[in-house]
Image (cartoon, rainbow, N blue to C red; front, top):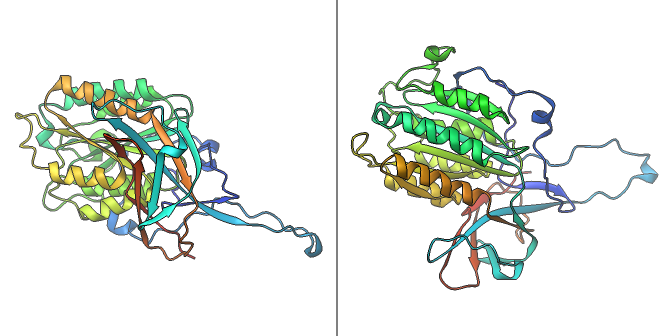
Length: 353
């Protein structure tokens, strides 16, 4: 697995410019494709640090040194739907209002973003409760990635049950992703797919949903720039993780990753008790939950997520609270139109000194 740098949910940029490319480290190296276990969350649970978006440059002679100014901009990706659940794509900057901790913020940057690269994480529940629908998950997931991914987009595939296995690291190659999805197997550790036994196997023999989200965000997505989304195919029932639900949500917020949950409710596969957990994870990160009861609804769910990923607005603002104290800041995005619903993240963690 390639080295990962830890990042917080705010980008530090020079003069407010917004990055349009992937991290330099990934552009310079090929992703590791070998399957294998991911490291234990307990070993990875150090405090995240804000990544500086500027690389230090050599200073000119003292008398010629230019004045350098760094400002912080908070980027919010928003999807808007009307009362008929149709995408609203004709809004302008003036239609949006943003507040942080109850204080109005000025929208400094606005764009209707359809081409900014997307970094995707496909997280597949391979616990026994998915036995009857796993083949349909594989087929729909592979089709989704082939249809949604464009040039410069990248994705990874993770399977989780009694441990968490990285089946494919970040890559643009959909054939590699397809092969990784096909290797997903019910209730086996990484040794069954060419790796080594998992390092975070649960003593309860349960489903490590929270561990999978934490590791995907903290270890894999935190250093990535631009739009980031996790697609979870699961019944959202966790019975074995070392990390908590809040740990998983916080890791996603710090990585600025949106969680979309395709909640598997096929009666022959699961009792589907995880709806509350799924809703909390999606709401706190700006994603959504789609009920999946059969193969047809699974295909439609992927189509809805694909549409949303390609129909987002980007809003950027310079927060009036400039303290670098590492605290969580609540964000609220509103649209000045009746009968619309906005999907956007609920907040971010400020950087520390």
